[in-house]
Image (cartoon, one colour):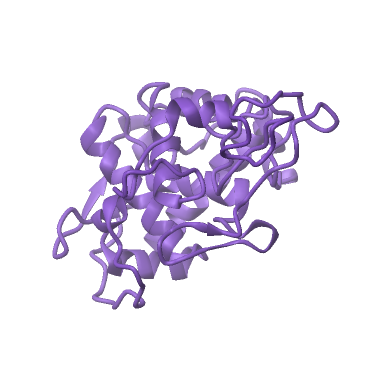
Length: 272
């Protein structure tokens, strides 16, 4: 669903050197492996819930459920937040964003997609921390090369990967006539979650409810990424989780980096 450059290395992936060497092959067999946990966010403004389902043998290694968030004001944004992002508890988002170093608007997109998928595909169990880890590795949460997410969740300027012309990544001729990536010769990965146009054409989603599937918009991209990952099964199972992330980018070190980042985010969210 995303930038499957088929892909050698991700566009902006920063492989966590020594910290992932022990997971280079069959990392889910390593003692202590943690499958990313679920999201605390509310389906109504006054409530919050933990969305996480894991096997008993894995649950003991996951961060403990965090206490109910304190009441905090979400920074004023214009236009109002709609769509899936509105499902997330804004107080939780502010607190976790501060603890984890994730932009609030990006976190609302990740958590909103996780909550929407919990209702749409309850057997998937995709936590917000996995989407956040992908967003970090792929584009620094929409901040690559001077871009930033606006209050509406759109990356400006748009985020585009290098031309897939065979020089650095596998060659991929144009599939969208430049509609999404601006190139009519070669495909390029687009948006904060780095979809190639052909993948977006299949998995593109409208997560903010504006009637447009836009890979540069974080709610749309997070929902599409989530659906792509959920296509690989029950993600509370470490083997299925790894298979799904590996499908996103066919590099074991990439999977390990995403796992380590997702677990760090989950731990930071539960620490404050």
